[in-house]
Length: 266
Image 1 (spheres, rainbow, N blue to C red):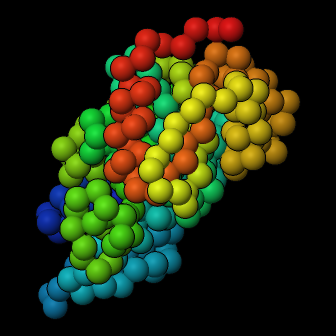
Image 2: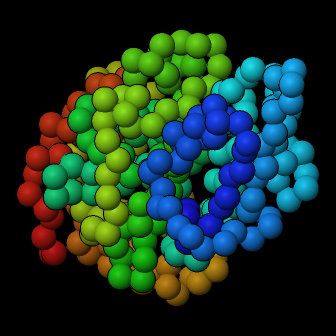
Image 3: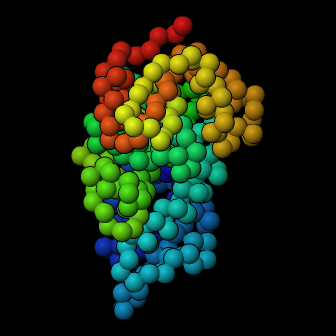
């Protein structure tokens, strides 16, 4: 179950099932039935050709290219889960350390997945590289989908350069999944294109535009979105990160934020 949407991936091939399951281990198992639109059927013929169908539509055809198949399957699941998400959600990576939960909102292509992977490599726990999801009380709902890393990003965080997108889970980075249910303690507004990384506190009020600007569903309930964000801004510490190298930035965040006591309400 992903963000309260039930998915079912079906395959009669044991190796295919194992590979898919590896990238879904961060999500809750459930006995609830899945809607037809959320069932993915994967078949493997005698020649080794793998075909994937979703709601009677073929969306991937590959022979031996597991990365392509996994990317396609996870993209279908991610798109459906995000589209159906009823809670307030923001494009953001989210990591945890001790008593803290840290969000790094950014646009698609803004480096949030690479930063998430770098932070996991630096010792923080992984909550999401895709979305900061907050319930009605402003508590974080974990969305631990796999990390899809470009060749450059994979190499930057020590996973090698395979020439194609690399799917990773925290264990690939010597890390672990984090837990939701806690209060967001830090919001880091990041900007790439600098040399040495720098991290400085900024007014908490800057949290509001940072989260609303990057939300992909605030329009569904603007009043609720504003209420949740202003409550987050009242409690969370806000930071501005400028950086070039993601591993250096992650080390700085781990050193400056991860071991701090939880933020207190101003």
